Image (cartoon, rainbow, N blue to C red; front, side, top):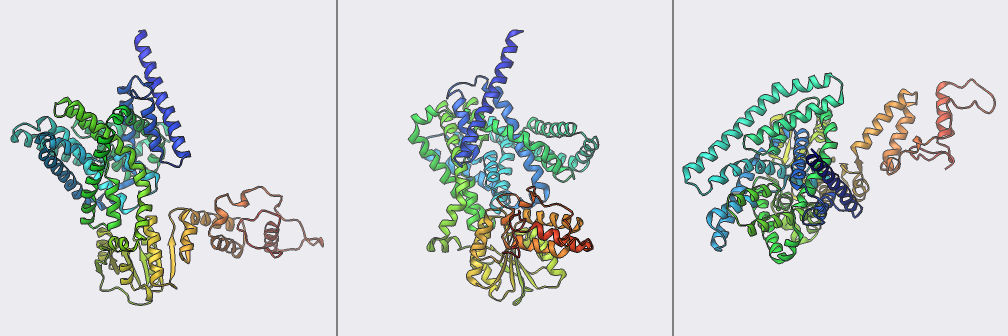
Length: 628
């Protein structure tokens, strides 16, 4: 009985070692202002079998690490919702084309060079066609790009790639078999995907809502969490058993929950587990990397990394452009999906077991994949800034804007005195609804085909094109417009739209939604008349209601709110409002100096307010006092 106990203790020690190394690596990366994902990967390399050799039970650690990507895809499904999934269904065809073209081009080049046989070339193409769902999504989340059009396109293609993994694994054993057997394996996998899709729809309608309501009625956090985890892992294991990947099963489970009222509660409970297991997963990926092999074949591996990433970029970026994404977004999609994915480790291992690739080729695939994964966080973090600098170069700016001409202008579009609304997301829709209620003429600018179809059906005047393009904004007749509202999802497009708009109409009234706190001052410096930050506005709304309920005069509350907005929310950042600091000011205020106690309640409130704002006492909004 002693040996199993020792083995169990060894596994616990290995997990503790990996988590500690991941924490140290993540901390070091954060201190150096680098993606923490890079710290996890390097920590895995350090403590893995090819590093210091501290980890002995590698297989068991890798098995536990699979929970990381499972929970990552599950939470993504919960956040994403079926409505958003429908919005990227168009690019899904692009994902199929990308996989097919990658396999075809790789096979042709491999066979033409005499390096591989046709079967090996097809297998290698399948390995290279996959991108890393886990790394891309983690990097996009860390850089706050998940709401951008390029992120949505990447997600649509990644979902197709994850679905294709099941097909690839099913076809691999029959890859060099006669065509009928190959066709049979493919048909079986397609049927299984269809079966899973039907089951997900039925379960999402009848089973999942009932189960979550039952769990929530118990009002027990532990029971709810265990039930949700069991649902996620159960569906993931079911799809794995059917020949698909467990990750796509976890994503489906998240989508099923996303339409239920308990989605936010589910997300709040699962996210801590996701982060812990995700760190374990990326560290386990690092343990597969052999730094000695990379050092011995550094020139060859760097050449393969460059060839793979440039080749995939040249395939993916044009496909994204073909499906209606503006050229800057298409470039970012190409860069974001230029790496090789973590499922390639699984395919490469299976191919080696089936004799499709040699040990040397397997090590080259693993090493090349590992280096592309290490490069990807830097690429996704720096790509928007690099693209912005390129757009500042005149001849490159013209090239990047070459396909950004307006595609369609509604015949009902106003010509003068209208409000232009750039972006028809949740904020844009609210703005349009209020403007319509007050009968103000308006024009909505958006680059999404689905959004334009929605605007057509609702009878709202629209301009189909990229709002960051000067050609599109010129077509919107900004120089004759009354105002411009910018409610775009990503920071780069917001800044470009503001800059282009003020170049066309310098005196235009421009109101901008800032998605990040650090963008507020920059947007003001670029010329915005008003910059609105959703979280700060929520704080002001809460405080306004609270102060009024506490008996503060409406005029005083409005004055405070106006002062905070006029200071660009400076009193709310980076330090907390000074009104939250304990002061010597008391309530109710002391009686007047002449001893009179006949002051009205409103006068008492104003007296206390003036004392509270008097120089030398903390001030909430920084409104100048009479002494100033």
